[in-house]
Image (cartoon, rainbow, N blue to C red; front, side):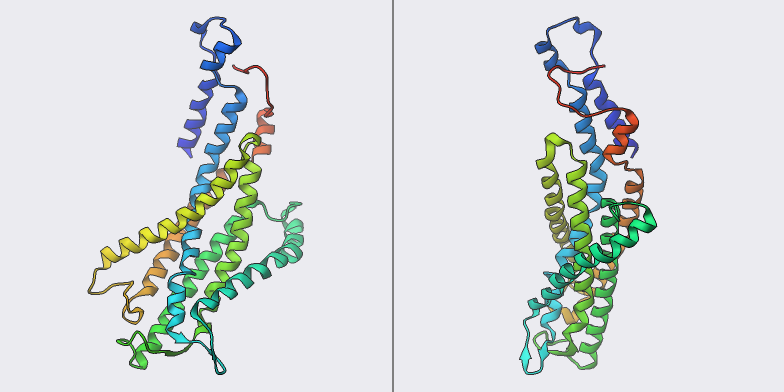
Length: 298
């Protein structure tokens, strides 16, 4: 946070008039000086970067729901009566969780939060993101425990060396991790979008969407990067992520994500506590962002 404060104080120099410049024309001054509005807008974006960075890990967890969780499902008993559901169809619980969480939040959580927190919005955008991050941690713990149970069933039935055999364990053991990540997305997605739209300067609203979407792409990139690192570190003898999941240690990868998410959440709490919302900060500084015809300097 000290670095962010230093950068913001350093940017103030961009609107300070150098006495050696003399009394040049306004056009000339614009080439050397930035307006206070320009400086404050850039400072706003810089202050948002710690929050932006600490939300990336959520989408890394999210990426597992369409990759390894689906791979787990394909090895398990997917029968409902005589019908066998596709492994990827478990994402319906993911989507259903999102659709269920939103009305629960609006109808139940918001009224309670208004009374408890004395906030007309219920939860602030940063609080929503925090809830989503916590749910992602719990989801990875649930995923690790489900994988331990799945591997136990594979060993007890002698299916460790047969990746194509169906493990006699219901695929619905994986449902909790889909539900938790889905609920987490409902909180994180809405929280991020509200935060970036609210806190980005008026002249940089399109950047707010870019900042939000970049966390998704970087989250998937980080997921691929972690998989590559885990492959290199664990090697071929005792791989965590083996081609045959029954011989791997996917649960360790989930535990790794849970630990990284927990550490990230601690950093997020520090960043969220440090962050002051735009309206409050500008009110305390007595500064109002306005479009000016002439550069305003100090």
